[in-house]
Length: 269
Image (cartoon, rainbow, N blue to C red):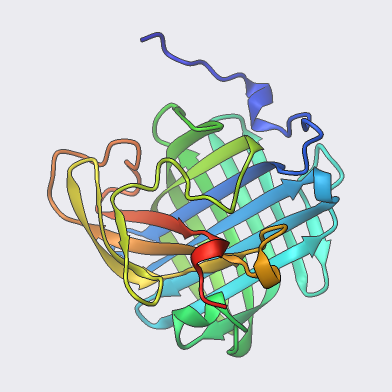
């Protein structure tokens, strides 16, 4: 099979199709080397709806599940990916195509004692959250549905309240564009099992058994869903057991972020 090549221009925003379900997303995962701290950040452009989404989650051994979920952000002025909203500033920035990206964030987040609160009213304690992180590629980008994914080393700082937490670990970033149906499970979500609360219970990817350690789920709006019911995206940082390899989920070694979408039609109201 011929290797798929990506151009530097593919790192930037693409022309939308005009379909309301078309979206473009830049996603960043990370985990400290010892797995004591992890998180993710995601910018999604929804041009057919005239808005953008921003997600950030941070979890850890002595850090509560801290979440930023904003689905009513003014789109960035391309080619910049900088966004601003009430209590939110963020910017994913391409330092060098397919080599180095950085993510900066200053936001007011909510600390949740129970991760399932992320599916509901998100009742918790307000806390300032900041990111100053860099993703440096460790391999070439690999194709994935609608775009590509690239393993990285991740370095920088996470600020939670008055705490400044150093990050030296691994992660991955992905860039996708095209039609996205949040009302249906993603085709590559196999191997992830959910418990009766909608959290990741177990996972197996590329022959490796994964043990969920920290949960960081999020709700996703779905146009036309009954009673405005959102989809539930279960995400978890998992410890990877010994095995032949993690296949397309090859970052971070020893720690892997997995996810599975529970469509709006099957979530609890």
